Length: 280
Length: 330
Image 1: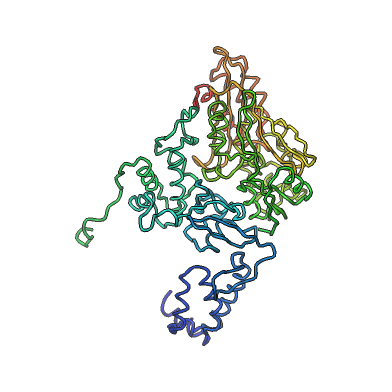
Image 2: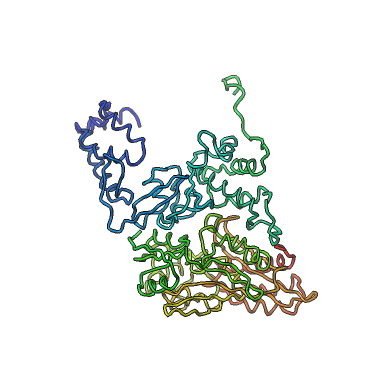
């Protein structure tokens, strides 16, 4: 967009719209920083926004959002004081989950998926919503240690189960070996599929140890334990996790390293010196 | 997703009664297909009875064969020592389907109940006699690349999408179901799913509310020579365009017994008696396999975009039989 165009647009703006696009007041800045936080805080922001004088245009947009949020399944109740609480639906049920070692209790409608409960109610947004139809694997979590698609699981179906999400893999500051290997081998580009890829890969290790077969496993009738997986095996076993950036070779390298316990050379390195006009 | 009442069954009898009493109620176990269809608005039950924790997940030896619980997970079934040792074709068929995550969730009973992946069935803006009887078939003159070439009707050309069932047909499995009267009945697998005919809305012959309890597979002599071949648009995690469950039992150099079941070609797994009869008593050569393949696809008729499945089907039958003969899973 050219500056001329922008100036022409500004000439047509109302006072409110002009105010909206001008430098925010300290009060507005304070509210805006809430936007970067989790959903509950964001709704807190939405509740106060109209009073903050952000302008009619903004207020309209926010009112729409607020209406949507109010009808959103995730927004029925909140234990957090000061947060806009919406009455629980008539058919709300209490579901107890053990998430990353901590007991959590959520009051939800039956149609809330485990994925939405994790992200919208419990605030664990590491688990990603990709396709929401069981076709991409971005929502993979471990349920009782087994990789599971949280988008095709109702939270109610998981009552009493142990859930491990990407947030639960590291021990404090120490990354899970699979997380460290994904970083070493650059097993991602945009990173959106990564939590699902890593949870899936962690389960893959256990499955191989238990001798579980895949479609490409040969001689599987005897049921040997502690399988040593080829790259072909890793690819087949990871086929439920799609990566649109195409980081597959690096994902396979990361998994191979952790699976074999042997260092795998990374296929990238930092440039040795900065590129200049002379070197280009 | 429309609102629904959720309850968890503690006992099979009451679960069957609850669903039988409400025509809009459904069982849910793994949920991998049902929840997807509910999100799409294709399925709109007003009540879900969660049966996942009922005690129906055992896999055990039975008269030399096995009984597999309806609620055993696909991954546990494929990896059970008895299945791997004596029914490797079943292991392979299960492992050819879906992804590791979905196989951890999906149950054996639910797998039999999964619905077609016909795009016109999924797209609620399109006509579909299966989803909404009497509205017509969008696929008949539409994009019918993944559709049926055998056993279809003018009302419906959708295919049964599963892999596991193709192996069950090869083993003459029997599905044990429980009805509202508390009695158990046995359905031979070949009578479980239906061809579309005039009632494509019916995928199978279960009465509403009947619950699959177990699937029984009799003893067989195919374990040394069987193979599940799956041809699809990508190497993994895709539905079959054509698949073949093939099994052979040899008597010297001649074939004593054979099984040929095609997937992805009809409204149900397509067991070809013609192909099997062609194989029995003959030497296990490529010529024999080609004759069987020709017999299996003899009555096939395709549409604008799926004619390719006929030749693909023939070649897939030959290759599956070759690999079975070579003991590819042994």
